Amino acid sequence: MNVKRVGVIGAGTMGNGIAQVFAQAEFGVRLIDSAAPALDRARVAIERSLARFVEKGRMTPADRDAALGRLTAGTSVDSLADCDYIVEAVFEDAEVKRSLFARLDQITRPDVVLSSNTSSISITLLGAATNRADKVLGMHFMNPVPIMSLVELIRGQATSAEALMTATELCIRLNKTAVESADYPGFIANRVLMPMINEAIFALMEGVGTAESIDTVMKMGMNHPMGPLTLADFIGLDVCLAILEVLHTGLGDPKYRPCPLLRRMVAAGHLGRKSGQGFYKY
Image 1: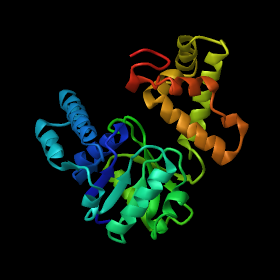
Image 2: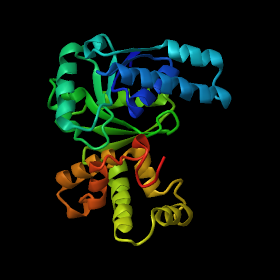
Image 3: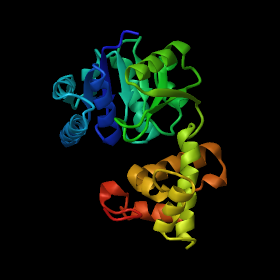
Image 4: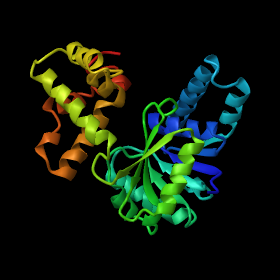
């Protein structure tokens, strides 16, 4: 592995967290987003996150400054042409991702691995948009990226063992634990998690319990660190809906049907923490 410069596309919550952990691990990082304000917000979020690490004694001020110095930002995907590894972290839309992967295939060196942080979309589908399907894989980080240690690595139909090994070695450098998943809708994490969240929303809609009661049962009865409805607000209800749609369509099983209440809340713009209103107010 000879990865020194990493390109990260998408400056949202996941993208800025991914950029931060690569910068902390002494990689040069280029963070790209088509919207300049998103890049400004990402820089502020990364600075705040690193400041908390300094306050807790997990890194020195000098290390913080060095990490920030390894991070650059821009609005053009073409500036990633000389990167050694790519992580895509844009919105969960298959056609947007396929178009982006086709462009990355044109501008980056043929040996560069193209990875996606997708939480549910087929890696095989993304790889088919390129001429290097053997070097396309899923690299699904968990939120919040700087804190959570798991990375789900997804092997598409054509993904090579060499590409997967490169991603695994990067996870070691990032001090993350890599777990391999086959390329099925939702992979492992969301195939198990999202039906639980969806069922909690059905229970709320049907009046089985209040949001507080449902979350308390799962926290105190099942030892979950946070309840499913709080977690849904944290993830973003629009993201939960998008993943459930992929599960429902991809697996064809009615048990993955998104709860009507979830659809209504997303339609109303009640997306959770990021909008100030979800199952709880923020």
